[in-house]
Image (tube, rainbow, N blue to C red; front, top):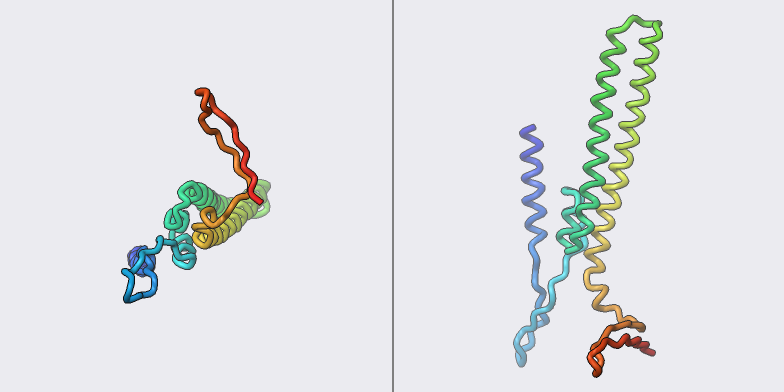
Length: 174
């Protein structure tokens, strides 16, 4: 347990070094002062954070509503896998306490197999949720300023009218 805590602290320390937000500056020009560019998250750091902690890469990429979805999905799958593993151990102990060849022995064996299959299913679901968590964090960081770069050709707006009402306008750019 101590090794796990030490490893977790070490991993978080290394990740925090790379996760420091950096403000990029334009190339130095002697005639003009340096211009600060906007901060953008690193896709690699975002993916590494999501690998270590569910939803951390989404929080780093400022996609706050993605994080609880992945936290809940991974937490639920991990809890169900853990619960199924405990039930499988209970069925295994029950099976070993019964007389071999009886109907109760066979039922305990079948229950054990079912709970092991449930555990394996939830472990695979956890792996899939973790994979999607990492990919989503990477993509969210990579497309951080995509909305600002996008020039939509169609926009609908509500503007105040000169008569005191509201006018619905439709703008179409060519």
